[in-house]
Length: 511
Image 1 (cartoon, helix red, strand yellow):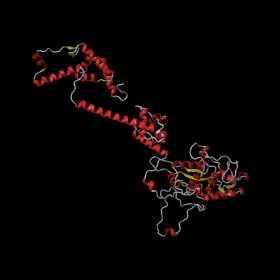
Image 2 (cartoon, helix red, strand yellow):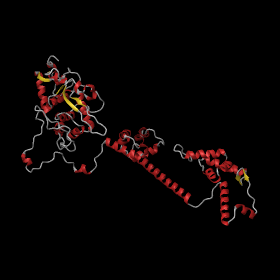
Image 3 (cartoon, rainbow, N blue to C red):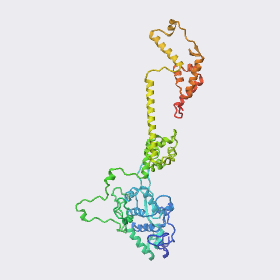
Image 4 (tube, rainbow, N blue to C red):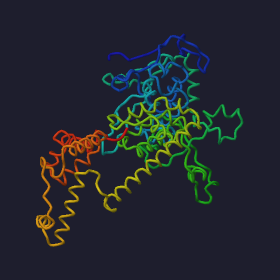
């Protein structure tokens, strides 16, 4: 760079504003103010570094009043305008040297949420007022590193006010240029910006706690109360600064009469007993997250799902005031799937039109009563099943229904009686002159009619999913004799049904 870099503007563009500003001037000369993300670094910035925080706040107030930057032109979410909240965040940044603000620090200082702080930092970068020197990182398992910013003055500010700049070192980057003068037409606006920069924009008071009249409520953006923050965990020492910074925005020390007792009150306000003792009332987002956590804990097929995703899926019923009992009642009415591939998608499908069908508290109460009645009936049925199983294995013996099994049981009992009497089965038959039963096809004592009747009974039970008759025959008679009695086809079907009943993919029951 061989010549000093100067900037000037004619008097017609001294006060730029595409819309009416607070200073009452309207100018359409300057283009829209917006810095894309690729140019939000110091090395690629077209602006200049602000000499101190006070001068930088003049540029911040100029951007806020000019209307050249409108956030909603570049994004569909976040703040709608560059307003007092953005200026409050900028005031905290103006006091840091170097400018390394942690998100948690700005949250404590401003009382905003973490997402709001990130939004306003992004707006300051898009307006050309901040540029990244180092972008913070978050390493898994390690501490988060705060970003370091350079406070910048946009080129549009210098052009609008007729500020002349010069590059004192030809080898230095362009963003190090310094101010060498200002046009006469821009002095009045600069004086107004200086007054704004010296004032402290504070957090507005809430309507519930404010005792001021309605006229004072309109000035809450400038005369509210800011919650002081203790010195613990500062990311940047606040006591260090430059000699050129203004003292108009600093806090004066209290008089000695206030410190006569030697005890100073903590600047941090104490919480009221009403909020410290009781639970804080949840807002809309809090209710969604609360319902999502309860559903994930109570529904087995939602285990392991992300709480934010389930909160988004269940936002409709949560906003309508539904509880987990209401959701259980609706799912019981709607029906659940036995196999779940994507739990959040299934929940979204099941909850579709739920608020339109159960649109009144009376309908929801009726659904809850039906669900509770179904739960009680299912509980009683489980008790009956357990009781019947215990009675079956621990109660008195019951004679089997199958004639084949009856014949086998009678033969077994007779053999036991012979053993107790000291005689074998053959000796007993000879003593009483009884003939041994003929074996027909491996099945003793049964003719063709009885075998056909046994097979018909087994086939009917298999049609209902009952395999106990054939399984008992296999266990008592052996596979070969059971196959001779019931046939190979029925025996194969019984084995298939018995194997399928132990699988989770098949349900066998009465219809």
